[in-house]
Image (cartoon, rainbow, N blue to C red):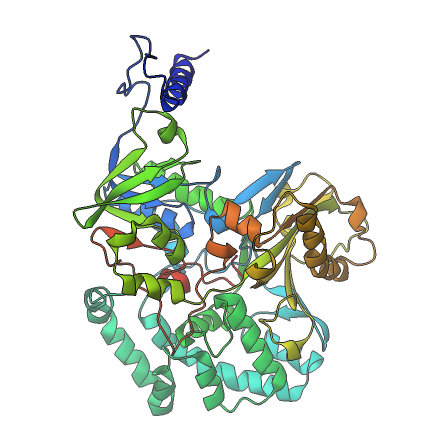
Length: 554
């Protein structure tokens, strides 16, 4: 057996016996609790990042690139957070996002995630396409992106009034995108430093774009930080389908309808999807390829990633964050690290605002701040269905993405009303065994956690509830795949619930994230009310709005 393995086993045995008060137990003379040959690495880093979601990996990668000693501590056994991939019986599943655009865009207005990957000297090979299937009460049709294609689809499948209102909306919004993109997303921040990173550098471009829009367009652009519904209302968009469609896009992007989503988000997305020459992208090796590119880039510059390393609490000493304490993982098992990772400069949490709060000592932040976080509304959670099945008898022209809306009158945010389906093996052939397809169906942030709270995952009650609440997913899948699909013949059928989200992603109540409505409140910035503690990810601005900018990201 390898010496390192023997040493680690001896240390683990010593630790276990010591915890049972066998104080007289001693290690062999050649095994030291401070032996860095046995326990490679460091007790500290400049920056400790909690969580390896997309936000955490982007943060760590850029820190490493700029010569900061950084370590990422991930509770799960794979990196990626809600965007991680997993393999089961030869199928390589995405756990979350699968609809992307802008990976190959360049320049200040490029997709922020693409900018980070490019800065790290990495790339993500993608397949491109320009449509997805839509199943709505009005019928079924192939929805194409681009400035004119969707309008043509509307004219045929919905009616001329919808097509006219859509044109009116695009004619107003696409010019506004110049103003929205005049401030590159990566230049935005939640403190007065925005004056140096954004306003001072890009204000001439912003002023020029506003002048080109004219008085009326500039007036609408002034609403970029207001709810998108205000722009829609100002254009007197009356067609019910267009109003519903805008609500759907808003909800898939941000977890709130058009009366709660920031106009800048929607304008940015419209510019990505409905400008000339636009297209959608899917990583040929699955969503996990994005995570792998970020990890490679970070490690290339000396950054470190520790998996199975669950952070128990954030250390606060003399009024500032100084590191973290672990309760699992390689570092935890090796007593030479005494379960502590010190941060010389900062701790960055990629956990949600609620989970970050739970990591802090009670008296480290004010009661007012603690109550503010607890009172922040949450989006609901998800139901997931991952399937692996035979490709025979499945339509050969099957597309990668499908959206099913059962009833517009219930609202796109109603539970069990909207189902999203991706079949990535249509483009990424290596993701499934030969002659097979894999599929991911989910309800996008509409599953109430309250239905599952307190249910034992090992109980018959849980099994029954999974069957009941996943039926809407099975029905949508059957509608998409046709009569040749037989659910009983699936090679793989995995159902995920809010408890799955809570357990594997460490998400408070399995939530999609904060349900903060534009015009009513704002997302927190990156700074915390505690020196040397910062946050990144979906509980902060701008990452929550701009880092992925892809709809329906669990």
